[in-house]
Length: 225
Ligand SMILES: C[S@@+](CC[C@H](N)C(=O)[O-])C[C@H]1O[C@@H](n2cnc3c(N)ncnc32)[C@H](O)[C@@H]1O
Image (cartoon, rainbow, N blue to C red; front, top):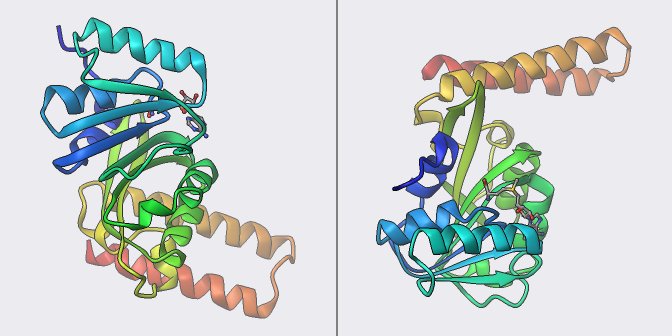
């Protein structure tokens, strides 16, 4: 029987474009790879993990799904030793780990779609992608167990510059379902941080002005949703 993979992972899996080769980096249970194999999304699938325990777990799940031989499993740090794939999924990891993995695999800049689901440091990750010449082609917000997760789809395009607000939500994300809820949370957090720092006298006039402009521009974007 097909296991339910939950709305977060389903959103990740459904964001994978039809492709020839797919790597599910940090696969753990292997559910994304299994979904992709069952649904004919990729011709060749690699499920990788840095730890033996999760990889054993993935191998068990893959065997239970009768997909052994259809999904290759690899024990490695990030994408080390893995050659070019058309699509890379990195889900359920911190933004900094995701950046580190991408930065050590130059081939991710060559005709490769990234499907990223960061658990932390999402703003740093967006900034990193823009600065490295990736464009965010789509961004989705998915709710699971009361938490709103973000799924970023990116592809290298040489870079086009970006406005300060795009660190907090990509242009593509503005028209996605749940973008209003996502932005409300971001604006509330920035406003809270601003008030706290102002109260502690921790902001220069220049920093105050910058924060106010950012909150105002995000609030303006929010009104357009
Ligand atoms: C919280 S689980 C997420 C599993 C799955 N991708 C998901 O979203 O549900 C994180 C997985 O990433 C693996 N991991 C952490 N750092 C890694 C790295 N540098 N390279 C590959 N896998 C890594 C962990 O071993 C673990 O299995």
